Image 1 (cartoon, helix red, strand yellow):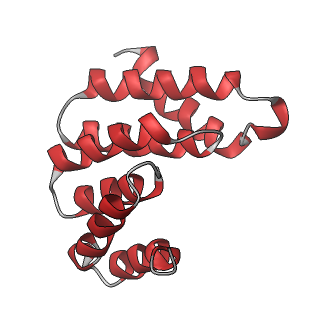
Image 2 (tube, one colour):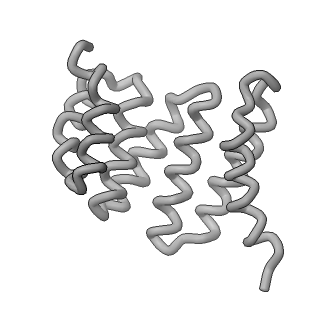
Length: 131
C-alpha cells in the first residue's frame, strides 16, 4: 500500500519526462496487488495510450470503469474516449462521451464537476452538429 501511494506521481513524472513506459511495470504490479482498486487500471490506461498500446489502454480503461465510482468515473470515461479516438473509432468514442454525460447528470449536484462536464459537452457538440 505504501508503494502505491506514489503511483500517480510516478505516472506524472514519467509522462513529463517523455518516458511513460517507465511507469508501466509499477502500475501493473499495483493492478495485480490491488485487483479491486480502480486507480491502477485507470493509470495504466493513460500510460498504455501514451506508448501506443491502444488495445491494452482500452482494456485497462474498461476495467477501471467497472470499479470506479463518483466523479472520478468521468475522468475514466474521458480517457476511454481518447483511446477510442486514437484507435480510429469515433462512434465508440462518442458513445463513451455520451455515457459520461449520462453518468455526470446522475451525480448529486454537489458532486458534478462543472469543468469536466463542460469539457465532455464540448467534445460531443462538434459531432452532433454534423458537416
